[in-house]
Amino acid sequence: MPMLTIENLEVYYGMIRAIKGISFSVEEGEVIALIGANGAGKTTILHTITGLISPRSGKIDFEGHDLVKTPAHKIVSLGMAHVPEGRRIFPSLTVYENLKLGAYTRKDKAGIEETLKQVYRHFPRLEERKNQVAGTLSGGEQQMLAMGRALMSNPRIILMDEPSMGLSPLYVTEIFSIIKEISKEGKTVLLVEQNAKKALEIANRAYVLETGTISMEGKASEFMQNDLVRKAYLGE
Amino acid sequence: MSFLTYLLSGVSLGSIYALIALGYTMVYGISRMLNFAHGDVIMIGAFTLWTAASPSFFPGNPGLPTAVSILISILVCTLLGVLIEKIAYKPLRNASSLAVLITAIGVSYFLQNIALLIFGSDAKAFNSVVSFPGLEIGGMKISAETIVTITVGVLIMVGLSLFIKFSKQGKAMLAVSEDKGAAQLMGINVNSTISLTFAIGSALAAVAGILYCSVFPQVSPYTGAMPGIKAFVAAVFGGIGSIPGAMVGGILLGIIENLSKAYISTEMVDAIVFAVLILVLLVKPTGIMGKKMTEKV
Image (tube, rainbow over all chains, first blue to last red; front, side, top):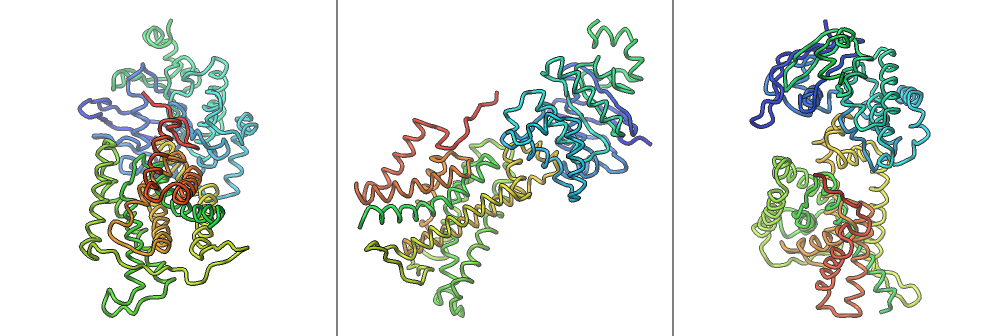
């Protein structure tokens, strides 16, 4: 049984039907890429999964929990973390305070310390800057902080929204190699990206989203060979 | 009276303004709204204490001890603050800020008229909750109310700062005021965090109301209006949304008010206070400690 199943999901913004009945699933341990152009509905899907937006209809099942009926603040303790688009760190708090908020729902002090060490291992830069106010970090460092903050809840699945957006090529490579590391540690990853090439390189399977519907799905390696995908999303 | 005496009673009045301004600024920080009913919570707090402590109003009430009456007053205001948020403001969380502002003014009039119905329009004599004599140091007289107000004000401000800096709920309040969506993703319950903010703000208003009416010993349905609006000036003065700003703004405003009363004119005091607001808005619209705001497009 898949870890996360989305069935016939429909989301409206007022009168506008943004997500037009999509279905997809994520198996435990997979890296799934959701690729597509601006405005295809990628962010909307992630926001609906973690409860920031309510769907008009459809089902979202996460390990037997009905996420449509679960309030947003209760989802993280089920083992699902979300790195939102635009990072959305808490700018006036320090790096350390941001990370501690990531573990807000956890009560096991020793476990939190252990996770904090892991996060610092992934992102040594965050440890160097732990007392710095987060708003003063560079874009790439803020992305690292947003990812570190999500990891602090010790999730089994992590949703990432455009982690490469606005970053220099050097940072993009670094961020993607860290996503790969996180996946190797056994965490499931649902990755939304406009940088299709990078996303397909690390993904097992992929879905292509076009104006609210899924137009293609398959193995990431096959997508790399697909002429249509290469033309439309890989810029070749 | 010496300059020092004026200054000290200015700090005392300022501590009261600071306590009220904290309620304004915390609520603004977390829900981006100006709770103009906040001043009237002060009045309800003072009336609650008056009712609980005086033997005459409710038949059969022998007049409760001061400490118990203070506790009841704080409790009533805390509940009232949470209720106001749940009933009046929560349904408008995604509404335009103008709709929220008008609602807040409506709640303010509602509370004043409830008090008018129950207690009538004439001012009641309010017995100071402070029952020990003042001090005299080197010919300088310091009233007991001044001492108590400053002590209580400082204790509460230090306590609140520590609570926000070090407690989990305090951190949650900061997170919600910065980004509600991201706070939810951390597992923070936004509704209960907003309720907590209103509860703390209203409890501080009760304390402020009791202290205010102990210094100016009477209470009427309009008692809360003036200190409320002045504390709002203090909050803007310090930088609305900023907690240290509200403390500094409140105390400075108290000092300005008392010194102008002593050296310029008693009648002009309120005009001077509001002139300060206009000046601050002209020179530094974000207040002394306010953050520069970038308008999101």
